[in-house]
Length: 154
Image (cartoon, rainbow, N blue to C red; front, side, top):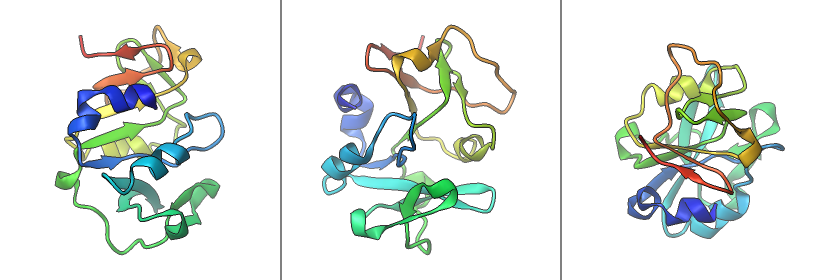
């Protein structure tokens, strides 16, 4: 998460979509708490087969949602996509060509297809592979950050 803070994309962004981590993902709870009063932090909520991004206003505003993942309880005010400056994306694996492998349900693939904001994938070093399977609808990340390195666009 410190590597993310050091990027120009993060520093210049005021509205950032993050995720509340599940076991096996880079943990984000402390990062969210650190930044939500300085930057507009958005968290995903599962609505049907899609993700909606909602403003995070503090720990008291969360409830367990789909798959037991904490998400904002107030689902009435989705943030317009054009207001999002940056999206930080989890994944099962990423590769050196900036591809992402998700959990197979397509939630992030559908969301990313609607956003023009830069996309940063964060993962542990062991989740960064040379190549992963790619489908035509998969969206490439602009940056990938691990605890060891940051992969910039080629």
